Image (cartoon, rainbow, N blue to C red; front, side, top):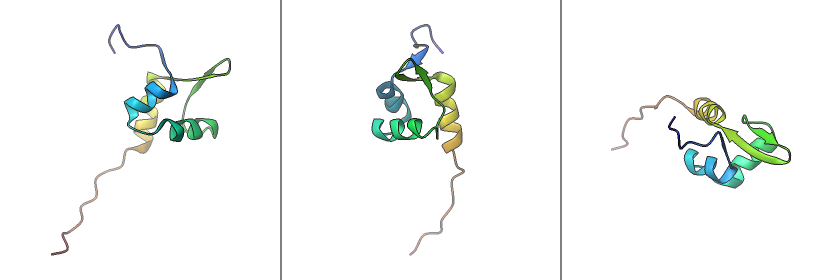
Length: 68
């Protein structure tokens, strides 16, 4: 983490880093399906939250034989 990294990311920033739609991330956070932080009424994501979201979504690649 560099000195320029914010302590908390907005939903838009977090969605850009994760490569997902902001609406998807907001829905998952509202349902408490992904780790997040509320600062008052504002939704934010820490670097640890983002890493946990990535780890939870990581799946091993599956090999599929070609259909030739």
